[in-house]
Image (cartoon, rainbow, N blue to C red; front, side, top):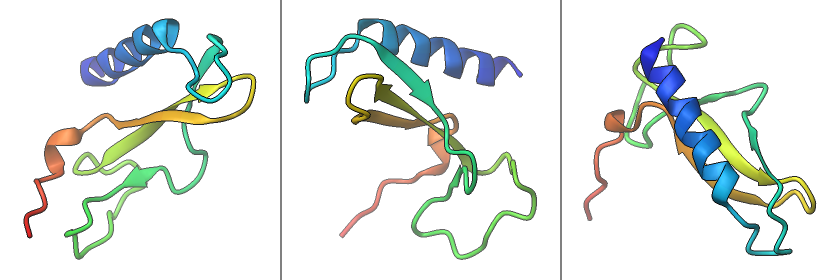
Length: 86
C-alpha cells in the first residue's frame, strides 16, 4: 500500500505545479483509465492473470480540466519496463 500512496502523492504534487501546454490552464486533474487499466511491457508475451497483477504498471494521467489534454502519463511500477534496444 505504501508504494501506491507514494505514487499518488507524487502525482498530486506534479498536478499542483503543472500548466497545460495547449491552453495555459493551471487546473490540472489526475485521471486513471476505468477499464483496461494495466500497462504491460511491449516485449511481454503473456497477459496478466489478475486484473491488478503486481507485475504490471497501473496507469495514471495528468489531465487539463479546461481542454482535456492529457499532459503526462505515468505507471506505478516502472521497473517492470526494461529499456528497448535496437
